[in-house]
Image (cartoon, rainbow, N blue to C red; front, side):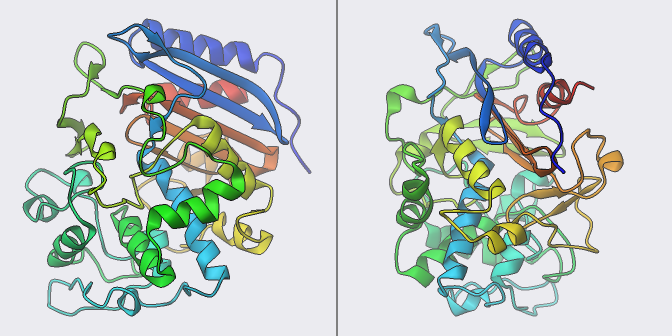
Length: 381
């Protein structure tokens, strides 16, 4: 049975959260959209798209999506599975024979498409490790920096680093979706940007979703957390995150020679993100079948723990296992993710609820006080 509609006061609570975040200069600007049972219950553009120019945020602002790219690419990968171009248990070497990363003992184990989708492939992200890690030494790009770097060069760099664990035995957030993007391109004989446009963007009317920027005038300026409040990102901007550092190069999105990162490389609007999430929540059409959508949004790594208490992983994003462990009011079976440029989203299927919150402020818009307060305001806790 579906949960009741959100109470009448939720919008006012969200407004209070937003107003406080902007007034306290924790978030520069953003867009929040909330739909329940297919109806838009809340929509607000807030703050500034360009603080220095005094340009207000607009609802159709385009953002660098960072890891919000992942669920879009994952859905396209599952569409290729349905079309018979890829099987989830196909080895990566079937499509990229030169990609053979090894374990520390020199063995080159099989890595499958399924393991790439579930982040159980033994790969990693450089930003999630302390400074001086092997990915950093090999100059592996996390898909957010190094404008002009080719896919071939980055794949070679990834493969040169020993695997963190035997594929299929652990979970580790990683560059796996970048590798999967190249698998998809080779399997289909088309570029990843063309595949996303054909399989996802066009069928769903996601007009601004692309690896390039279709209207630069609507592109929000990116900002990063700073000691005295958000600072405008420079050409190459480093942001501390956990034990590591995230390397941003905002200009990457304008360089057509940059490899299309299946994990972090797309741009789009909050409205576009809502469309793909709502499509999956309502059964996948016209992108994938209901059976595939169900598989995609279910926990696919039972018995394997992630680094986020209470959360498992589906075929493209986190799936809630234990609400108490996760310290969240969301229902078990909810799915969520975000992006380091300052984004968060979640779907609570038990309430037919979809929430998209894109901001131009890294990292505050993605994790911590602001997205947690938005979530809690929605549920009234």
